[in-house]
Image 1 (cartoon, rainbow, N blue to C red):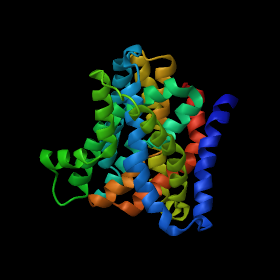
Image 2 (image 1 turned 120 degrees about the horizontal axis):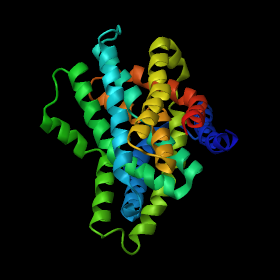
Image 3 (image 1 turned 30 degrees about the vertical axis):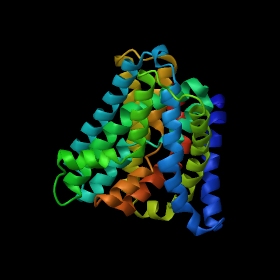
Image 4 (image 1 turned 120 degrees about the vertical axis):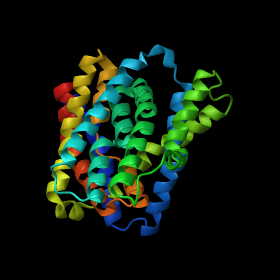
Length: 304
Protein backbone atom coordinates (compact mmCIF):
# COMPACT_ATOMS: atom_id res chain seq x y z
CA UNK A 1 0.00 0.00 0.00
CA UNK A 2 2.82 2.42 0.88
CA UNK A 3 4.44 2.33 -2.61
CA UNK A 4 1.02 3.06 -4.13
CA UNK A 5 0.50 6.03 -1.83
CA UNK A 6 4.01 7.34 -2.48
CA UNK A 7 3.29 7.30 -6.22
CA UNK A 8 -0.25 8.72 -6.14
CA UNK A 9 -0.02 11.35 -3.39
CA UNK A 10 2.21 13.66 -5.52
CA UNK A 11 -0.45 13.64 -8.27
CA UNK A 12 -3.11 14.89 -5.86
CA UNK A 13 -0.72 17.34 -4.20
CA UNK A 14 -0.19 19.02 -7.58
CA UNK A 15 -3.98 19.20 -7.99
CA UNK A 16 -4.20 20.73 -4.51
CA UNK A 17 -1.55 23.27 -5.49
CA UNK A 18 -3.74 24.38 -8.39
CA UNK A 19 -6.70 24.82 -6.04
CA UNK A 20 -4.64 26.88 -3.58
CA UNK A 21 -3.03 29.26 -6.06
CA UNK A 22 -6.39 29.88 -7.79
CA UNK A 23 -7.88 30.90 -4.44
CA UNK A 24 -4.90 33.19 -3.87
CA UNK A 25 -5.73 34.82 -7.22
CA UNK A 26 -2.24 33.98 -8.47
CA UNK A 27 -1.16 34.68 -11.12
CA UNK A 28 -4.56 36.15 -12.05
CA UNK A 29 -8.07 35.12 -13.10
CA UNK A 30 -7.34 35.64 -16.78
CA UNK A 31 -4.80 32.79 -16.88
CA UNK A 32 -6.96 29.73 -16.39
CA UNK A 33 -9.25 29.58 -19.43
CA UNK A 34 -6.41 30.11 -21.95
CA UNK A 35 -4.28 27.60 -20.03
CA UNK A 36 -7.07 25.01 -20.17
CA UNK A 37 -7.43 25.52 -23.91
CA UNK A 38 -3.67 25.33 -24.50
CA UNK A 39 -3.44 22.06 -22.57
CA UNK A 40 -6.53 20.50 -24.16
CA UNK A 41 -5.76 21.50 -27.75
CA UNK A 42 -1.92 21.41 -27.85
CA UNK A 43 -0.05 19.81 -24.96
CA UNK A 44 -2.24 16.75 -24.24
CA UNK A 45 -2.78 15.84 -27.91
CA UNK A 46 0.99 16.15 -28.43
CA UNK A 47 1.59 13.71 -25.57
CA UNK A 48 -0.87 11.17 -26.98
CA UNK A 49 0.38 11.49 -30.55
CA UNK A 50 4.04 11.15 -29.53
CA UNK A 51 3.37 8.14 -27.29
CA UNK A 52 1.26 6.26 -29.84
CA UNK A 53 3.39 7.14 -32.87
CA UNK A 54 6.66 6.03 -31.28
CA UNK A 55 5.47 3.00 -29.25
CA UNK A 56 6.34 -0.53 -30.33
CA UNK A 57 2.74 -1.73 -30.24
CA UNK A 58 3.75 -5.19 -31.45
CA UNK A 59 5.22 -5.79 -27.98
CA UNK A 60 1.75 -5.72 -26.40
CA UNK A 61 -1.28 -7.98 -26.66
CA UNK A 62 -3.69 -5.09 -27.01
CA UNK A 63 -7.00 -6.81 -27.78
CA UNK A 64 -7.70 -8.45 -24.39
CA UNK A 65 -6.94 -5.13 -22.71
CA UNK A 66 -9.12 -3.21 -25.17
CA UNK A 67 -11.92 -5.75 -24.66
CA UNK A 68 -11.80 -5.35 -20.87
CA UNK A 69 -11.88 -1.55 -21.18
CA UNK A 70 -14.81 -1.62 -23.58
CA UNK A 71 -16.76 -4.17 -21.55
CA UNK A 72 -16.23 -2.17 -18.36
CA UNK A 73 -17.44 1.01 -20.04
CA UNK A 74 -20.57 -0.57 -21.54
CA UNK A 75 -21.36 -2.30 -18.25
CA UNK A 76 -21.40 1.11 -16.59
CA UNK A 77 -23.59 2.48 -19.40
CA UNK A 78 -26.07 -0.35 -18.76
CA UNK A 79 -26.14 0.43 -15.02
CA UNK A 80 -26.70 4.12 -15.70
CA UNK A 81 -29.58 3.46 -18.09
CA UNK A 82 -31.24 1.24 -15.49
CA UNK A 83 -30.81 3.95 -12.84
CA UNK A 84 -32.33 6.53 -15.20
CA UNK A 85 -35.68 4.80 -14.81
CA UNK A 86 -35.75 5.11 -11.00
CA UNK A 87 -33.81 8.27 -10.12
CA UNK A 88 -35.58 11.64 -9.76
CA UNK A 89 -33.34 13.40 -12.27
CA UNK A 90 -34.15 15.78 -15.10
CA UNK A 91 -32.75 15.02 -18.56
CA UNK A 92 -29.89 17.54 -18.25
CA UNK A 93 -29.06 16.26 -14.76
CA UNK A 94 -28.95 12.66 -15.98
CA UNK A 95 -26.65 13.63 -18.86
CA UNK A 96 -24.21 15.07 -16.33
CA UNK A 97 -24.43 12.00 -14.08
CA UNK A 98 -23.78 9.86 -17.16
CA UNK A 99 -20.63 11.78 -18.05
CA UNK A 100 -19.51 11.93 -14.43
CA UNK A 101 -19.72 8.14 -14.03
CA UNK A 102 -18.61 6.97 -17.49
CA UNK A 103 -15.82 9.37 -18.51
CA UNK A 104 -12.36 9.34 -16.97
CA UNK A 105 -9.78 12.04 -16.36
CA UNK A 106 -6.86 11.41 -18.70
CA UNK A 107 -4.54 13.88 -16.97
CA UNK A 108 -4.87 12.11 -13.62
CA UNK A 109 -4.72 8.66 -15.24
CA UNK A 110 -1.54 9.32 -17.21
CA UNK A 111 0.17 11.10 -14.31
CA UNK A 112 -0.68 8.28 -11.90
CA UNK A 113 0.25 5.53 -14.35
CA UNK A 114 3.51 7.25 -15.24
CA UNK A 115 4.39 7.64 -11.57
CA UNK A 116 3.55 4.02 -10.75
CA UNK A 117 4.64 2.16 -13.88
CA UNK A 118 6.92 4.42 -15.92
CA UNK A 119 7.07 4.81 -19.73
CA UNK A 120 5.71 1.32 -20.45
CA UNK A 121 2.63 2.10 -18.39
CA UNK A 122 2.16 5.42 -20.18
CA UNK A 123 2.28 3.62 -23.54
CA UNK A 124 -0.46 1.21 -22.44
CA UNK A 125 -2.46 4.14 -21.09
CA UNK A 126 -2.22 5.86 -24.47
CA UNK A 127 -3.55 2.67 -26.07
CA UNK A 128 -6.41 2.83 -23.57
CA UNK A 129 -7.08 6.37 -24.74
CA UNK A 130 -7.24 5.23 -28.35
CA UNK A 131 -9.93 2.71 -27.33
CA UNK A 132 -11.97 4.70 -24.83
CA UNK A 133 -11.84 8.34 -25.94
CA UNK A 134 -13.73 7.94 -29.24
CA UNK A 135 -16.21 5.48 -27.71
CA UNK A 136 -17.06 7.49 -24.61
CA UNK A 137 -17.33 10.71 -26.63
CA UNK A 138 -19.84 9.14 -29.03
CA UNK A 139 -21.88 7.84 -26.08
CA UNK A 140 -21.74 11.20 -24.28
CA UNK A 141 -22.89 13.13 -27.35
CA UNK A 142 -25.76 10.68 -27.92
CA UNK A 143 -26.88 10.88 -24.27
CA UNK A 144 -26.61 14.68 -24.13
CA UNK A 145 -28.57 15.23 -27.32
CA UNK A 146 -31.16 12.60 -26.33
CA UNK A 147 -31.82 13.81 -22.77
CA UNK A 148 -30.56 17.40 -22.65
CA UNK A 149 -30.90 18.69 -26.21
CA UNK A 150 -33.94 19.64 -28.26
CA UNK A 151 -33.72 16.49 -30.38
CA UNK A 152 -31.44 13.46 -30.72
CA UNK A 153 -28.34 14.08 -32.81
CA UNK A 154 -28.03 12.46 -36.22
CA UNK A 155 -24.90 10.60 -37.24
CA UNK A 156 -23.64 13.57 -39.25
CA UNK A 157 -23.85 15.86 -36.21
CA UNK A 158 -22.08 13.28 -34.03
CA UNK A 159 -19.28 12.84 -36.56
CA UNK A 160 -18.91 16.60 -36.88
CA UNK A 161 -18.41 16.97 -33.14
CA UNK A 162 -15.98 14.06 -32.97
CA UNK A 163 -13.95 15.40 -35.89
CA UNK A 164 -13.23 18.51 -33.82
CA UNK A 165 -12.07 16.60 -30.72
CA UNK A 166 -8.29 17.08 -30.45
CA UNK A 167 -7.78 13.94 -28.35
CA UNK A 168 -9.54 11.72 -30.88
CA UNK A 169 -7.58 13.32 -33.74
CA UNK A 170 -4.29 12.86 -31.85
CA UNK A 171 -5.03 9.19 -31.11
CA UNK A 172 -6.01 8.51 -34.71
CA UNK A 173 -2.93 10.29 -36.06
CA UNK A 174 -0.62 8.52 -33.61
CA UNK A 175 -1.96 5.07 -34.46
CA UNK A 176 -1.83 5.83 -38.21
CA UNK A 177 1.77 7.03 -38.01
CA UNK A 178 2.66 3.91 -36.04
CA UNK A 179 1.03 1.26 -38.22
CA UNK A 180 2.31 2.84 -41.45
CA UNK A 181 5.86 2.86 -40.08
CA UNK A 182 6.21 6.60 -40.60
CA UNK A 183 6.49 7.45 -36.91
CA UNK A 184 7.80 10.89 -36.05
CA UNK A 185 10.94 11.35 -38.16
CA UNK A 186 13.82 13.73 -37.51
CA UNK A 187 13.12 16.62 -35.14
CA UNK A 188 9.38 15.88 -34.90
CA UNK A 189 9.73 13.26 -32.17
CA UNK A 190 11.67 15.50 -29.72
CA UNK A 191 9.40 18.44 -30.60
CA UNK A 192 6.25 16.54 -29.69
CA UNK A 193 8.03 15.10 -26.65
CA UNK A 194 8.76 18.61 -25.34
CA UNK A 195 5.17 19.73 -25.94
CA UNK A 196 3.76 16.59 -24.34
CA UNK A 197 5.97 16.96 -21.26
CA UNK A 198 4.04 20.11 -20.35
CA UNK A 199 0.65 18.38 -20.47
CA UNK A 200 0.45 16.56 -17.16
CA UNK A 201 1.85 19.20 -14.80
CA UNK A 202 -0.20 22.02 -16.29
CA UNK A 203 -3.24 19.77 -16.67
CA UNK A 204 -3.17 18.72 -13.01
CA UNK A 205 -2.75 22.32 -11.80
CA UNK A 206 -5.65 23.40 -14.02
CA UNK A 207 -7.84 20.60 -12.59
CA UNK A 208 -7.16 21.91 -9.08
CA UNK A 209 -7.91 25.48 -10.13
CA UNK A 210 -11.29 24.40 -11.44
CA UNK A 211 -12.48 22.64 -8.27
CA UNK A 212 -15.63 24.12 -6.68
CA UNK A 213 -16.24 22.39 -3.32
CA UNK A 214 -19.13 24.70 -2.33
CA UNK A 215 -21.09 23.75 -5.44
CA UNK A 216 -20.43 20.05 -4.81
CA UNK A 217 -21.94 20.27 -1.33
CA UNK A 218 -25.13 21.85 -2.71
CA UNK A 219 -25.96 18.73 -4.72
CA UNK A 220 -24.73 16.22 -2.15
CA UNK A 221 -26.68 13.04 -2.98
CA UNK A 222 -26.10 13.33 -6.73
CA UNK A 223 -22.40 13.93 -6.20
CA UNK A 224 -22.18 11.01 -3.76
CA UNK A 225 -24.02 8.66 -6.13
CA UNK A 226 -22.00 9.63 -9.20
CA UNK A 227 -18.69 9.52 -7.33
CA UNK A 228 -19.55 6.07 -5.96
CA UNK A 229 -20.32 4.80 -9.45
CA UNK A 230 -17.16 6.29 -10.94
CA UNK A 231 -14.67 5.61 -8.14
CA UNK A 232 -15.93 2.32 -6.68
CA UNK A 233 -18.19 0.53 -9.17
CA UNK A 234 -16.23 1.33 -12.35
CA UNK A 235 -12.87 -0.04 -11.09
CA UNK A 236 -14.66 -3.14 -9.78
CA UNK A 237 -16.19 -3.65 -13.23
CA UNK A 238 -12.81 -3.17 -14.91
CA UNK A 239 -11.17 -5.66 -12.53
CA UNK A 240 -13.91 -8.21 -13.19
CA UNK A 241 -13.63 -7.91 -16.97
CA UNK A 242 -9.84 -8.23 -16.74
CA UNK A 243 -10.42 -11.66 -15.18
CA UNK A 244 -12.90 -12.60 -17.91
CA UNK A 245 -10.53 -11.61 -20.73
CA UNK A 246 -7.38 -12.93 -19.06
CA UNK A 247 -5.72 -9.52 -18.65
CA UNK A 248 -3.00 -9.69 -16.01
CA UNK A 249 0.10 -7.84 -14.82
CA UNK A 250 0.79 -4.32 -16.00
CA UNK A 251 -2.05 -4.18 -18.58
CA UNK A 252 -4.56 -5.15 -15.86
CA UNK A 253 -3.18 -2.49 -13.51
CA UNK A 254 -3.50 0.16 -16.24
CA UNK A 255 -7.10 -0.88 -17.00
CA UNK A 256 -7.94 -0.76 -13.29
CA UNK A 257 -6.36 2.65 -12.81
CA UNK A 258 -8.16 4.06 -15.86
CA UNK A 259 -11.40 2.98 -14.21
CA UNK A 260 -10.47 4.31 -10.77
CA UNK A 261 -9.55 7.92 -11.61
CA UNK A 262 -12.07 10.78 -11.26
CA UNK A 263 -14.39 12.16 -13.93
CA UNK A 264 -13.08 14.06 -16.94
CA UNK A 265 -12.88 17.85 -16.78
CA UNK A 266 -13.71 18.00 -20.50
CA UNK A 267 -17.21 16.78 -19.57
CA UNK A 268 -17.98 20.33 -18.45
CA UNK A 269 -17.17 21.69 -21.92
CA UNK A 270 -19.44 19.14 -23.61
CA UNK A 271 -22.27 19.76 -21.13
CA UNK A 272 -22.08 23.49 -21.80
CA UNK A 273 -22.00 23.00 -25.57
CA UNK A 274 -24.93 20.56 -25.81
CA UNK A 275 -27.39 21.83 -23.22
CA UNK A 276 -26.44 19.67 -20.25
CA UNK A 277 -26.42 20.80 -16.63
CA UNK A 278 -22.97 22.41 -16.64
CA UNK A 279 -23.20 23.62 -13.03
CA UNK A 280 -23.97 20.11 -11.81
CA UNK A 281 -21.21 18.76 -14.06
CA UNK A 282 -18.68 21.05 -12.35
CA UNK A 283 -19.90 19.79 -8.96
CA UNK A 284 -19.56 16.15 -10.02
CA UNK A 285 -16.02 16.70 -11.30
CA UNK A 286 -15.10 18.44 -8.03
CA UNK A 287 -16.59 15.70 -5.85
CA UNK A 288 -15.00 12.80 -7.69
CA UNK A 289 -11.61 14.52 -7.88
CA UNK A 290 -11.48 15.19 -4.13
CA UNK A 291 -12.74 11.72 -3.18
CA UNK A 292 -10.38 10.02 -5.66
CA UNK A 293 -7.44 10.99 -3.45
CA UNK A 294 -8.76 8.33 -1.06
CA UNK A 295 -10.45 5.82 -3.34
CA UNK A 296 -7.87 5.52 -6.14
CA UNK A 297 -5.07 4.05 -3.99
CA UNK A 298 -7.66 1.95 -2.16
CA UNK A 299 -9.01 0.43 -5.40
CA UNK A 300 -5.51 -0.22 -6.69
CA UNK A 301 -4.60 -1.93 -3.42
CA UNK A 302 -7.78 -4.04 -3.36
CA UNK A 303 -7.85 -5.13 -7.01
CA UNK A 304 -4.30 -4.51 -8.23
